[in-house]
Amino acid sequence: MNFSQRFFREFADPSTWSGTVFYAVGFFIAALIASHGLRLAVNHLVERHGGDDIDLTSITFFAQVVRVGIYLTAAVLYAGLIPPLHSLGTALLAGVSIASIVVGLAAQTSLGNLIAGFTVVLYKPFRVGDWLRVTAPGGVETGRVERLTLGYTILRGDDGRTIVVPNNVMASQITVNLGRHERPIRRDTPDI
Image 1: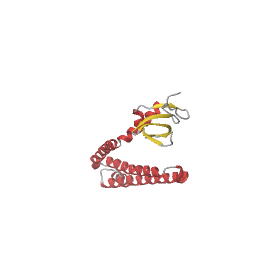
Image 2 (image 1 turned 30 degrees about the vertical axis):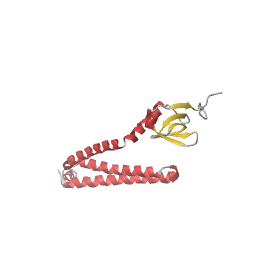
Image 3 (image 1 turned 180 degrees about the horizontal axis):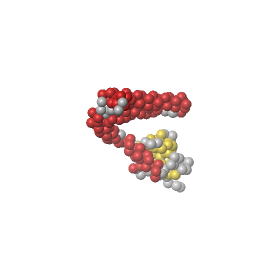
Image 4 (image 1 turned 90 degrees about the horizontal axis):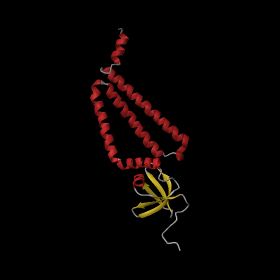
């Protein structure tokens, strides 16, 4: 084996100090490139569609979350590659598992609304434009379905008020679908 092969084999071996530094620099540069590419893509998206067409707050928030994910992924992969850091990589993965359980418990209501939104879309007990009668804390409310988002059903009351009902409530309560006619027929007074 010649000198260059021996040097490269020793230099690229993750169990040596030179290999540890080589891979640390490599993973860091890869994470920087991926993060910079994400930033360029987000900037291009904002410039292309303008600030009016997209929600800049959401785009910025999710871009930051993805950037943190890029660096965490690089750190976990690096820890898994370097033999002395295997136990640290395992601990990081266990920490991510525990963190996901904590986040899941903290976001239980939001996740319930999200899943209930999929249920409402799948079973279609009502559609946009239908008049619904729902039970609210202030009593029975009647409104036309304006929008069905992932977390909430937005109704417009017959008096013009906006009624926001969480999807898990829409999926679990008794809802009367009055149909698609223009205004619900009120039966409060007897016909004469």
